[in-house]
Amino acid sequence: MSQDPWKGLREKLEERNWPAVYLFKFIVPADNQKVAQTEGLFDSKTAQIELRKSKTGKFVSISAKEMMMDVDSVIQRYEEAVKIPGLMAL
Image (cartoon, rainbow, N blue to C red; front, side, top):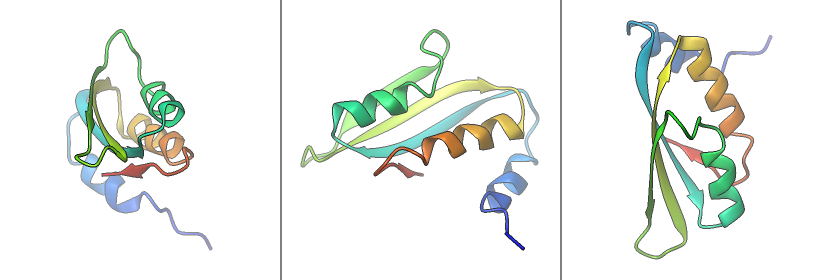
């Protein structure tokens, strides 16, 4: 029997009213391809995306605010994000 790795997040998200603007936060290695892949998870026309390099320059913090329709759409976005090598979801 496999356990849902998103159970805790799902429970917290279900306490909110949807649709709602949701803030995603990720840290990725400072590799242009990985940064582009992460940015590509979001609609460039509607999402507010902010990039910030770490002090050492080895990592990039990516914050993205986007209107999400429901809990499942948020979980699906995280499921896609964790496929990017080196990405850490916060």
